[in-house]
Image 1 (cartoon, one colour):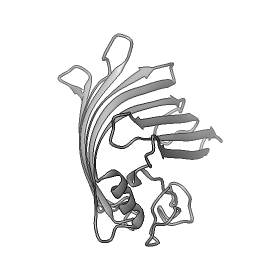
Image 2 (cartoon, one colour):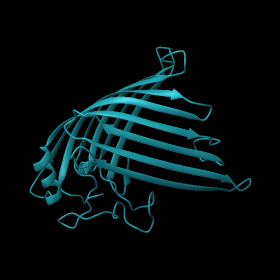
Image 3 (cartoon, helix red, strand yellow):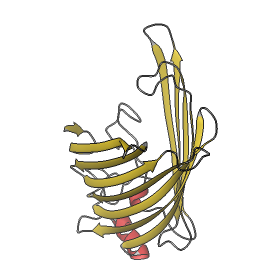
Image 4 (cartoon, rainbow, N blue to C red):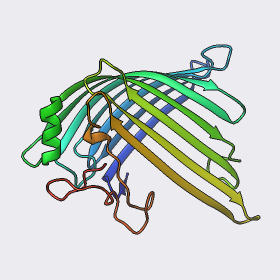
Length: 239
């Protein structure tokens, strides 16, 4: 139970079994309730899917989002998603992932919806069935995952909806974390994130995939998600 700036009050819960039936397989259930969204997810991970060290994760999820942020462009979404993801070890510090997912999503507008959202729905309807290819590479040499003192974390992901989907678009994200040990009691940490998304085949990026900045996790000194193009009502729309 808590409070998070862009999402308001929240209640979250998680149940995980890391050695399901004594096989080393991981089963997890997550529930999250925010002022702006609700979600439920189930997953099963087999870390020893084959003898080459490949892992397999099967997941099923549902999410309802009232808006991207609390002062957004007047739309909500309902999404069901099922996916299979495989992790591939590359070296001691690096691994890759590749997966396929199917998502059924509806985007609902109202009298408070902005012109930008209404134009998107007019051009693309309000219900979508998308087939997604999800890929990524991670390099992690940190000495520990919690409060690291030294090392590097680089994570790149590229996700794209495949031809035949109702919406055709892609998103790419890069995260960089560098930690430098400055002695027994101090270390220097630097973090950067870069994201880009666009439509292809004559499609636009859906409004629920837009990026925002602002807040202590991105650009301090600005309100959460306040750095963004504005919609026809002067509210943050993302870009």
